[in-house]
Length: 257
Image (cartoon, helix red, strand yellow):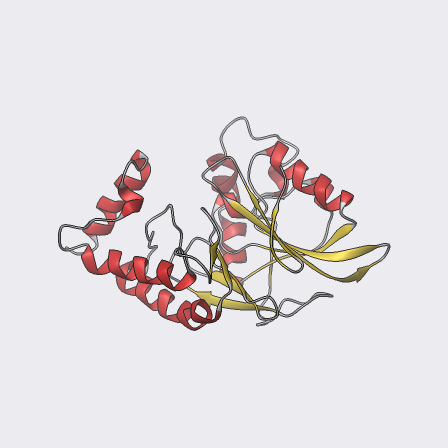
């Protein structure tokens, strides 16, 4: 499992499960190695171990983790990644703590027992910037996909780590806030989308400013999807989509009634 470098000091791993992404951001010095921020490491145990192995070979030491939201595939960890604080918004930390058993159960009965205690073990951070020895990483919180969901903005690299938003393989998946809340979340992200050189969704491929699949095009596609729910919607993400995503599409239509 090798990552793709998308900008100076920024790498993206892609899991074989649902194209889930993990992001590494390199910073300053941490002991004998360079400091690293690790965002949403996922998914299978061997992939988590592979990320840890790559970090070790690259001379990177994880000094901080970040979970974008409290869904089980975004609050994972591995002992080889170390004991650095794993930050999240206060709402994400609360949900992870209260729903720990459900998060572990969602991973299935074969999830290793030694990894289970690490699931959702995040700490609340109210600051707008992640405290670490590296480039500024701004927390952009909203409630579109999940209460306490947070994208990350890397100003220096022009990278937006969008969490489970703005995907090329998944349609919008609202939480309690519904369709209107999802639109509000997209509005919060829009200024960063328009400035982004690269956009990393929680699932799917990286969008780049150059080319056809740009960050702005991702935003436009999600807005078009929400606008088209009342009509005969055609969205490429629904063609040949798995059953769970088609079911989500029908749930999205239910928000209209």
